Amino acid sequence: MSRIRLLVGTTKGAFILTSDGRREEWDVNGPYFGGWEMYHVKGSPADPDRIWASQSTGWFGQVVQRSEDGGKTWNPVGNEFSYEGGTSTHQWYDGTPHPWEFARVWHFEPSPGDPDTLYAGVEDAALFKSSDGGGSWQELAGLRKQDSGPQWQPGAGGMCLHTIVLHPTNPDVMLVAISAAGVFRSDDAGATWRPANKGLRSEQIPNPEAEVGHCVHRIAIHSSRPDVLYMQKHWDVMRSDDCGLSWREVSGDLPTDFGFAIDVHAQDPDTVYVVPIKSDSEHFPPEGRLRVYRSRSGGNEWEPLTKGLPQDNCYVNVLREAMSVDSLDPCGVYFGTTGGQVYASADEGDSWAPVVRDLPRVLSVEAQTIP
Amino acid sequence: MIRVVLPAHLRTLARISGEVKLELDGPATTAGLLDSLEEEYPVLRGAIRDHDTHKRRAFVRFFACEEDISLEPPETPLPDAVLSGAEPFCIIGAMAGG
Image (cartoon, rainbow over all chains, first blue to last red; front, side, top):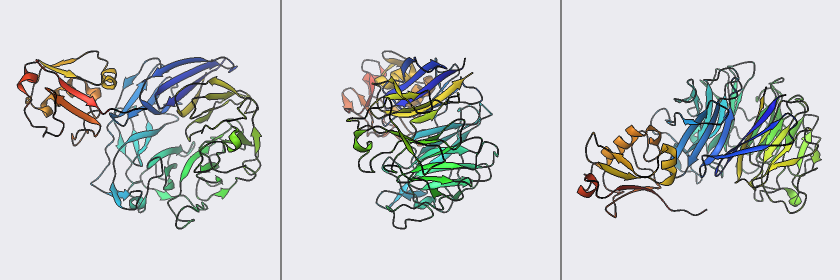
């Protein structure tokens, strides 16, 4: 029977939660790297026991850890992320020029087929690639150096490259999302990039339909239908049917279309999950009721999923990296909260149960299905 | 023999307990001490000072003989008491709650 391993990053360490395929009883291991901020922990699809962890603090900077045994033991690998080229600038919050400064790794995206290749999305927004398992990193500087780079501004959480989408069948096609610049697409394996924000509308910026400047929170893809992308924007849930060349809104009947996390069912590319959050100034569920919303139709029509989730006095948030699905049938869905709970559903979201309740603030959740 | 005291997070990162004891290969300066420390414990590269510029990280400070020497030039000679091992060279992370 397959096993499930949840890789959980929190503000005070990483945790690994494991279960058999029934997903009813869980072992909780950790904290690993206690006291450090663990923005993301992710395994290689090609070698699930090879896992990378982004470990950082504001005091002592970035460390990249790698495990070769499913998270039992770890060793530091390369942590040198040097921006290519001189002293270019982006815009600071007040519009003044600000030099690019590395702060941390927000996201790892391992190659689906090669356990030595992975990408890292970092703050200040840039994309790095490693071809030696994380030992060394080279910037794909065409992204930062395309025309709009000097105009990018940080979102409230910093100017981070938080989402990397690798096209599952065409290795030349990649997309990234940056807060608060938007989506960018490459058709030459990361050498050159162009904005991919057509159809996005953000009332919070001077030109709501600007080519760049949108605060995209997360993009999700289903490997069987790679031209369909789903996006949780600052406000609005969006969909693209042409791999990011254009977008249309599919918020439909959601109670609020603000949120951070979004993911797609492992078997059904039309089934999508979001966690609506009240607003950009009140980062908690509407009415204090924690509800996952599921669309079975690729957006627009949404149903609340509440069984097993707190429906009174719940004021947690679910961050962009904190939702994941496994690949079992029925599909398992998982998310972590800023209150330290990790919830699991073994029935596609119909019912939920907490795996663990009192972790530090959860930054990321990644589900691995182990054969 | 030079004694170096690291903050808890860096001791954990370097997998050491207690003080670090170093023999300096290069100049007897703050920069020379940090070079030797990073040579002995490569995982500390980038954690105390920038990889490229060697600029001290903002929330890290250096103390020796009960004096804050963080703002001294990296080429400043280390105090005799540190060189003799009578006093440790202390690397300290800024205090913070939360």
